Every structure is written in structure tokens, then in C-alpha cells.
Amino acid sequence: MDPVHLLATTLGLGFAAGLRLYSTVLGLGLAIRFGVLKLPADLHGLDVLAHPAVLIAAGVAFAAEFVGDKIPWVDSVWDSVHTIIRPVGAVVLAATAFADLDPVVRLVLVILCGGVALSSHATKAATRLAVNHSPEPFSNVALSLIGDAAAPFMVWLTAAHPMIALVLVLGFLVLFAWLARRIWRLLRSGFERLRRWSMA
Image 1 (tube, rainbow, N blue to C red):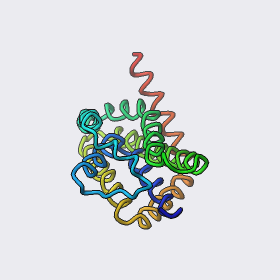
Image 2 (image 1 turned 90 degrees about the vertical axis):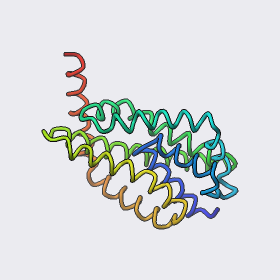
Image 3 (image 1 turned 60 degrees about the vertical axis):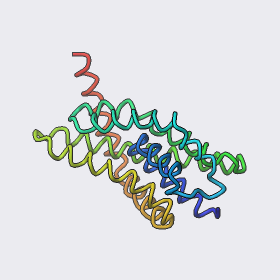
Image 4 (image 1 turned 30 degrees about the vertical axis):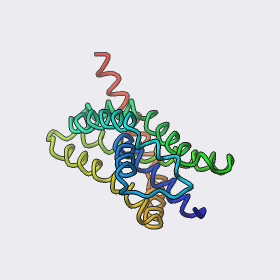
């Protein structure tokens, strides 16, 4: 796989994992198991995602996330816990995918994947915190359903059209850099409110 496709795969997987780690793992695993996705030789490490134990674990976690993400404020509690889990999961995913690459190249790709996952997670969490202040639940559910569709779509796009995925993620990163200060400020204040609420 050429360097540009490697970069596209890294950023696409990181973006998807930052939005929905478990659906990314489950979707990849099912696609590999049923032959829907043919992995390049460089990514054969991801074959482990098709193992039944991995599929069951990812399926259970996905079901819990699917339900919890539809409930206002429960989704933000879930996001606060996953501020560590999603980027770390993306790092593990990248390390598994690129296991046979040169160690220096692998480390660079792993760091990029984790960084993109943290960025997409932070944007998603901040958006949901903002929407949770709305008295009606419909916008929250609508955003959750968009997230449910966005992660598998990004996995498919990364596999089928890596250059388009690369352009989209790079565009997102530019937007994230522009909004980063506001995003982190909103996250900090929102998580502080959640902490005070849980201690009350």
C-alpha cells in the first residue's frame, strides 16, 4: 500500500473510531468475516476483528452504546468515560492494522490515528453537550442516529474511496483546529456540570 493510501486508511479509521469505536470494530469484523471487505496484504492484522469473541464483545458494547447514546445526558456521561477509551481503541486498531510495517512508520500512523480519534470524539462530545441543553429530545436522537450512520459510512468510504475519505478528514481537521478552543471550553464546562450533578 502506498503512503497516501496508508495515511487515508489511518485517518479514516481514526475518525470513525472517535465517533463510534464499537460499531467501527463490529462493522469491520463483520465485513471481513463475510468477505464483503477484502483487506490489502498490509492490513491483514485486522483479520483478528472477524474472530467470534471480538464480534460478540463489540456487538454487546455497540448495543449498549446505541441505546445509551439516545438518552440526553446519559450520552454525555458515556462520552466522558470514552474520552480515553475511543482514542486508545483507535491506537490499538492502528497498531493491529499496521503490525507488519516498519516500527517508525507504524508509530507515526498510530499517533495520527489516536489524534484524529480524539479530535472527532471531542467534537462529537461537545456537540452533544450543547444539544443536551435543549428541552426537546428529538435533536439529540437525530444527532445520535447521524453518528450511528457516519461511523460505518466512513469505514466503507475509507475502504472503497480512500482519497475521498482523506480529503474529508483533512477538511474536518482544519475545521477542528479552528474551533478547538471553543470545543475544549465547552467540554470542560459540560463535564464539570456532570461532575457536580453526580456528586449532588
